[in-house]
Amino acid sequence: MSHNLFETFAARMRERGNADFITTREGRRYSYADALGESGRLAGALTALGVQQGDRVAVQVDKSPEAILLYLACLRIGAVYLPLNTGYTGEEIRYFLTDAEPALFVCRAAVLDEARRLAAETGCPAVETLGTAADGSLMEKAAAATLRDDIVELGERDLAAILYTSGTTGRSKGAMLTHRNLGSNAETLVGAWRFSAEDRLIHALPIFHTHGLFVACNVTLMAGASMRFLPKFDADVIFEEMAHGTVLMGVPTFYTRLAADERLTPEATARMRLFVSGSAPLTAETHEAFEAKSGHAILERYGMTETNMNISNPYDGARRAGTVGMPLPGVEMRITDRETGAEVPEGEIGMLQIRGPNVFIGYWRMPEKTREELLEDGFFITGDLAMVDDQGYVHIVGRDKDLVISGGYNVYPKEVEQLIDELDEVQESAVIGLPHPDFGEGVTAVVVRQPGAAIDEAGVLAHLEGRLARYKQPKRVFFVEVLPRNTMGKVQKNELRRQYDATYR
Ligand code: MLC
Ligand code: AMP
Image (cartoon, rainbow, N blue to C red):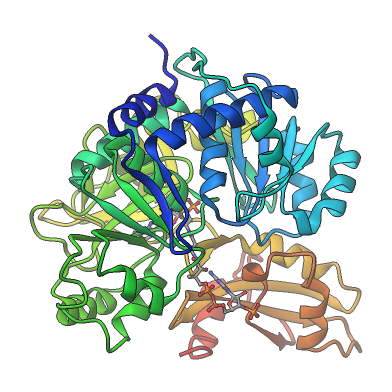
């Protein structure tokens, strides 16, 4: 039996035929039958470009239906889809191309020259462009290509995608996700969240991370539902779309913004059946405000790049504010003591570990990192601190890893600190996340100057511009004489967070 996830999607495409798969507000539309045909043509183009089974296809493009068709084309031929945040700078891209050694890099036309230079430097043999209006050299090649209507046979451990997640050491790790990982999770979520062909998902997330790509698109495909593709979150547009949609998936910032909007009423959301939140903690305050104004209890769930979705509030039953619910069917969870590794009793806080068919198979070319985080018995150490209450609901109470989540994007402090520390005028720095009303956490730098140096906030930020994606750049930079340290010499980030707590409030 082949494990190619596209087999399941293809069955849905044949059944759903002329039904909507993706539509846009500009009036563009792909039916399920179109998706079957176009992904075959793109598969033909990939083959003509030399992409073979197991090859990586790196993709840094603006959101479009065609980018999803490219993802589907990769699945068809067993190529490994490697989506990249559009915010990444050339320097960041260089690392991914070097590490993943893709056979093809698909980029935006506006950065083609830079992409070609980076590809040449890193040994990537082909570069094509993809625009947002079914344009670009890749689409031209697809139009001229011989259609591939086969679906490559794959085994249980064959990769569907590699998604890079930043690492605590500052080096990004490529999480290897198999067809089985993605397929099992999509199937589980369709059941848990009652997706059907009648659903119309309002899709306002980016499509280069787990949430917008796998949770949203794979669940839609698995259910034969449709998606309204929006370029980004825009509250005005969301209110218009809610008159036609049934489901919205978003990061907490979506809901904070919607809950603060006077247009949020039971009437405005009358056609909607489900609001899902994830990727960062949703405050109980936002959960309650949203429900009070709309009558809808947001369904909060918990997931990760490495594991897809693990834990979810119930569809039927209480969706409790400040909790992420119960493990999804087929997903096992344990909460352990950091020192002893033993499971902690109910009600106590410990390290959250996850096992199941959704859990990735390791980090690309990092066997040691894989061994550290993916245990021999199959449990993955999430780095999140959790507690189960007496009703079985899981609370994510904090993080054991040094990570900031800003508007649903992960920022690893080390990566930012390393760049700030490069400056001659800087002795050392500490990057922290502080409570932020819109983004949940705001990236903030605390810097110690070299004796006699005069560098200021603008000077530090100027150094980061062009080197780091904008969402990783600190919103504020503060200067201190010394960083607080514990007796072991470790910077006390808790103390810094306490001191600067009011910065964005
Ligand atoms: C934009 N900016 C951000 C930011 N997004 N800064 C910090 N954090 C962010 N997330 C910057 C912009 O560059 C701009 O700066 C300024 O903030 C204002 O921009 P905006 O117009 O208000 O931002 P907007 O376009 O509305 O974007 C905010 C957002 C977006 C929250 C809607 O960031 C978003 O869609 N986030 C979703 C991330 C996501 O999909 N995560 C899922 C990961 S998967 P300037 O200075 O340039 O003007 C995962 C697993 C799981 O975690 O469980 O799901
Ligand atoms: P990523 O590596 O981008 O996939 O982000 C995964 C991390 O996001 C998790 O390890 C958590 O720290 C966080 N996360 C995701 N969903 C939630 C949630 N509902 N509540 C709290 N944290 C979350």
